[in-house]
Length: 247
Ligand code: NAD
Image (cartoon, rainbow, N blue to C red):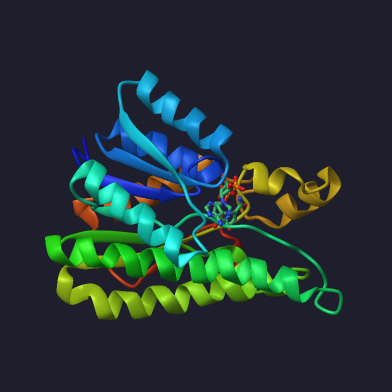
């Protein structure tokens, strides 16, 4: 078991990559604190973990609200007694060409994807620093390299890379590793809305010629959250079937 008795907080744990990571971590002995906005999803994941003999609790909190993040992290620490791993995974898209993009679309994406990652990392750094142990995995995207219709998303995900490197430098003295996983197109509800013909054309541009299964991203989170990755910090790992090689 790679994460025996480690306590892991996963934001956006009710769906897609967050759900796959929660199930994988539970199977490796971790206790899961699942954060999401949508109770019907996150309670289903918590039940799934319990049915398989694992331990989890869920917390309804918006990662873009400092008050809600602080309340959630305090509750996680009081419920589980410690907090070892943060998977900063919650994220949204609000796509539009830049000349049509509304201020609200810009703000929502930056608030959840970038500010939310900052707020969660900042808040967990206090209990982690006290323990002198912590792993923070942020989530960027292949979109960070630029994508038509995603000025807001690309900016948020490029920002997450700068955030990761700075957190890695600042938190190293507390034995907190901070890294970043940058997925390419992955089969989750986020990509399910892409029209079929566009998805097929995009697949042709992926060297591995397919979208990722969420588990293939979850395994990278597992490695980075495990003791095997103890000397890795400030790094970005693209899990994109080779797409970034062509950039
Ligand atoms: P998803 O839509 O399946 O899941 C995202 C989860 O985040 C949902 O359960 C949602 O309710 C939750 N969430 C949204 N806003 C929140 C908030 N303010 N507070 C708390 N929870 C919130 O998405 P996914 O595809 O699993 O994506 C997970 C992460 O991976 C995101 O950061 C996304 O940007 C990134 N990513 C996804 C892909 C992809 O192709 N699916 C590619 C690159 C990066």
